[in-house]
Figure 1 (cartoon, rainbow, N blue to C red):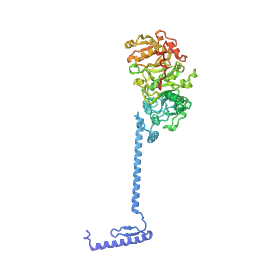
Figure 2: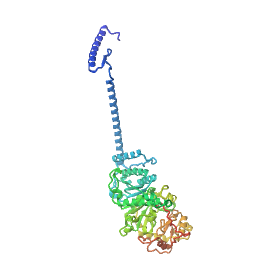
Figure 3: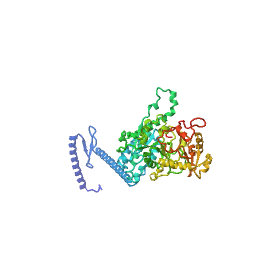
Figure 4: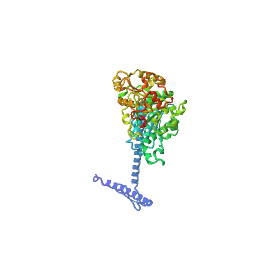
Length: 583
């Protein structure tokens, strides 16, 4: 193509090229005068080719390209962050919509084998911020929270987590998600939740912190943490005690530490200090202060509850408040083995305090108006072993306990407890109820003291009297039977034959009512009654079931029952304190 150009065309291009070169040369001279940089024109394409002289100076083209690159990078980053933000808003909207649309499936907190690290705490703080942003269940009204749940804990984080999760699953506030406003005018038993920690175990603190977020966000139930500092006198050897004596009594100290913690925690609740000393910054949102507690439900870190546990406590709360002959409501049956119980709706009065998930009213702690000196806080368990101390006649004062036939609590702890798991095998055989009873719909008037005493005496007195435990086992399939015991050695033998608790505390066998222990042998419709000799006489004593506030010591009680205090070895049966926590 180039060769085919005419001579005139070549000359024309040459003239144009010369004019461009001259113009470029003049521009080069002017730029050199102003900048000191030599610009050489390029004849071929009319573009300037720059050659640097002197110091190094960046290229305008290179600067321009770098600026464009940085600008594009910034824009891409901004776009990415905007997309991420919009995605988060969409997910948040879905969460809120799901919460409003129905019940929410809540996943159980995970703790990675409870290895606490700084990153875990950061995640928890982020969760708190998310909780404030997301839709959360409205908090319970303060007027509903007059029956707190107290959980005693120390250093068993895995046990505490299991207990708290079961409490979360069974708590009455769960119904708020399905029927909003249902509980606005009703008592939400077990609210607020108060976890009292002995010592400063970090894994336990982590579990409490995680469940605080869960309860307050999902159920609207405040959770408080109390930190108890054990007394140094029980942790360090005093100077006035020699090493031998200190080591000889080492087995007692866990029970004394537990008793001190119990008394301190209960007083913190009934005095209201648990609320006034609370740090609002620990919660996910502002928590209104609950009223002074009318009663308290007490669990330990190794107790699992049944699904109707709170319903049971709620149905018996008013009776506990108004009946001065009642000492507590317990959810446990010491003889509640699978083959010895059957009726999930049956409740009884008992002279034995079982513990292991129980409720106490304010007047028992402070002392009722007509007996102000009888309050437990006056001299709480001075020697430790708080549960055995409660069972003493001068403390219980003839008052009784309501208990179920089928336990609503299950003790699963077997390590690091005050008793070092000594009762684990026995307690593991106690059946935990699986029937979700709506206790509020049941008529519990039969638990009134005079009515219960009359009905119970009538049934026991009509039972067939047999002379041996073998004979009792053969007749119980068709009718109630009763077997007499006249001393603790005989009672122990009979109890062992039936597979029930064989010990007594302060002259009262476990589960006994007026010295009578019932066993639904084989899980049928009829009972074997283990009776003291006075029942054989056929006349109901005037004080049967009515011993509340009477001054009756152990010796007088056994004399009235006609029971010998000694066994074949000549020692007081059951007088040795071998206690365990809440056993």
